[in-house]
Image (cartoon, rainbow, N blue to C red; front, top):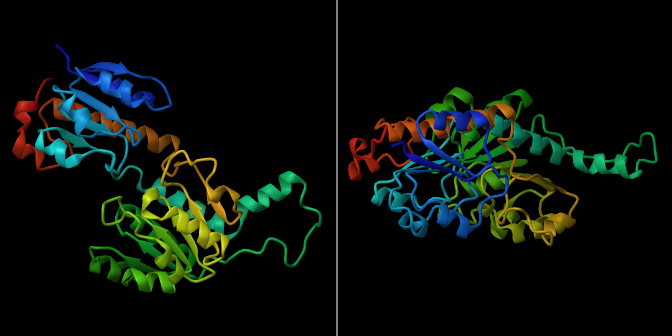
Length: 335
């Protein structure tokens, strides 16, 4: 009897094909996420769940899926999964690190450049008929990027990729992380500083930390007021890392010059959000990894990780490695 895998969202077909080779796939081929009730009902008799950031895999859900052996998420972050509880129940969690690093770093730069040079505002001006003068010395002035100081909060894979791109703009790069990377400091000529100093000195601040209890609200009113009034904040990590209400005030009252945001405290962004009223923020719908190639690679990696676990093999993208002590792979093997 083949193991049963529930796929909660529409994903690139290469991921489905990998699962179908050895599993019974229950594919909910829809773009919107399932309701909580639908999700709970769907996992009652499955051996694996293929999910995204939108599906909350918590204690209640895992307890309602007694056969569950592995959760594969098409994301790097796992803050939507109660990983500690999964580990305690011997449930393997696989994710998709690495494959979206460069694509996300590219997009962080897209937001940085768009916010600095007011690209979205300028586009709106042209489309609305507001472009009345052929050229004017003071029209749509923005901020230079080259030669400025970039502060990176979180020097993991993506943060490091962003730092590498800064070299092409002759930028001074500062970074803050809970783990100091002395090897990278030397090889790339970047400087470690504490968070407060980074915020004070940087012309651009790009956030690349996971969402944890320690990083939730990491950038709030106090931190925003430390930044230069000409500074620009970019966030492609997780929305709750930044206090959204404080950021809206900072942008409205010009504590900082601008922001580029791909993630929000609540997604989709509510239509009553004060951010929508502001011209000095670029807003995108959580698409930093949304290239054809990268999403296909993510789909493949998550599916391959699920299949490997069900074959009794440890995948490279296993997140909760201690789970093997609770439930050895030979006890998980179904294929």
